[in-house]
Every structure is written in structure tokens, then in C-alpha cells.
Amino acid sequence: MREESKRPGSLTLTNHGELELFFIGCGSAFSRTMNQTNLLVVKGEQHLLIDCGTKLPQALHELHIEPAAIENFLVTHSHADHIGGLEEMMMVNRYLTGRRPNIIITEEYEAILWEHSLRGGSAYSELRDGKPLAFSDFWRVIRPTRVAGLERETWQTRLGELDIKMPRTKHFPDNATSWHDSFWSCGVLLDERVLFTSDTRFDPELLHEFDTRYGVEIIFHDCQFHTGGVHASLAELSQLPARLKQKIVLMHYSDDWQRYVEQARAAGFHSLVKQHHSYTFD
Ligand SMILES: [Zn+2]
Ligand SMILES: [Zn+2]
Image (cartoon, rainbow, N blue to C red; front, side, top):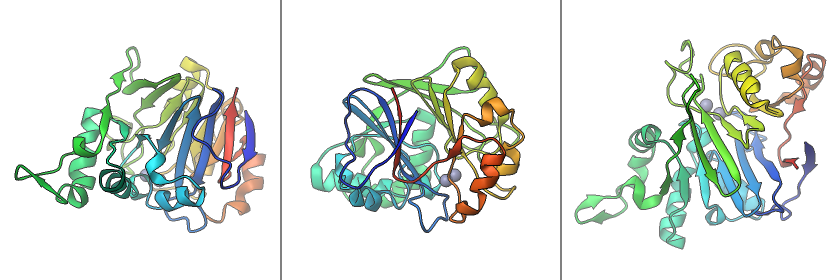
């Protein structure tokens, strides 16, 4: 994995075919100094935006990428730091470009996302034949298929040469016992090489399962510096075996992260993600 800091204007939506992850942000929901956790994946002619928090449209603009340039979306769950920028993206596309971008989404989560979050702000801008707009008026849906042979519900699709798998995760409520009784949330496995957990509580089964089955090279993992609530903590993650910790790059952390860099290094983690850094896999 090659890590590189990128300046505004140097980020592109295509490359020579390598798998590249660019962190537009790597902060928590309440971060004031980072752009939440939003990730742009680029491989060859394809790009994919994973999560679109409230700060994302402005953050993209500051990177000299206009929001309307994003053609492919995937959102991992319905917290505002992951979906709060979607309505703006939908409006920009419907009323400025006239395009419908692609969204990779299961049938179950599409209904949740639309009915619980997006419909109120976007359905009633127009009436067509007396009816408000629907999800499909804004989005071209790419429907993933279920991966067979995995106990954990996991979905799969491709964008060109990019393989995308979406395992369900254990994020919230805070007393859920597994992904089974959690509200809808997922992580993303890219090219069976890189696991991005998005937000999750401590769930060692996910890491063991995917590491054993796919031999993942790097795991970008949610991390908060205190224990409790709906995120994995540094103390909990520190219990993992050394062979897993050395693959884990921590993300989705709070503004005081610099106080914990030494502790994370001493515990055996690979590193902390840096905002505006790209991570490339040849
Ligand atoms: Zn979050
Ligand atoms: Zn969340």
C-alpha cells in the first residue's frame, strides 16, 4: 500500500487501473476539523463515492471536484455524517445537470433510506401526474446480489474492474448483539483486498471472517478513543491479535486524535488515516 498526501486540484476521477482510496475526510460525526468520514475510490475509468455526509458537497468543491461530477454512490447507513449530503447531490443533479447518478443499494435499504430520510426533502419539489417524485426519479439503481456461502448477509456487485462487496455490520443500536439485530448498516470490501468497515461497534467476527475468507491486505476501521456507544473503541480493538492489528488503519476519530497516535502505535496498529491522503494498491 502506498500512502500519499494529495493537494486540491491533484485529485482525479480516473487513474491507470490501480485501486486507489482517497479519504475526503476521516473524522467522526462530531468532528469540526475534518470532513466526517467520506471516501472516494478510483480504479481505471471508474470511481465510487462511499458515503456522503453533510460536509461532503463543500469538501468536494474545495478539492476542485464539483459534486455533479460524481457518477457512482454507495452509502453505508443512515447517520447524517454518511447521508446528510445526499439531498443536495440529488437536487444538483435533477435541477442543474438533469442526470441521474448510479447508486449501489439493496432493495431493503433503499426503502429505509427513502422513507425515513430522503423523501421529506426531495419528493415534493415537483408533482408529476399529481404524484410526488420517487427514489428512481433521482437515482439509477444498481442492485447488488447476495453472496452465497457466507452466514453474514453480504451483497456484491461490480463497477467495471472494481469488485464491491457489502457485509452487514453491527453499528446500532448500542445493545444489538450482532448484525442480525442491528439497524441496516454495511461495510465495503474492495477487490477482496481492502476492507472499509464504515461505522461499526467492536465486531471481531467480521474481521476474522473476512480475513480468513479473503485474506484482506488492509482494514480501514472505525475507532473512537473512549469505550461505549455505537463505535469500536481503541481499547476494544487493542484486544485483537497482532496479525490483525498490523493491518488496521484507524479512521472516523475525534478532533483530539493527535493525543492517541502513540498509544495506537504502541498497541500495534498500522496507523491512523489522514484526511486528503490516498492509499493505493497496485
Ligand atoms: Zn459516522
Ligand atoms: Zn454511524
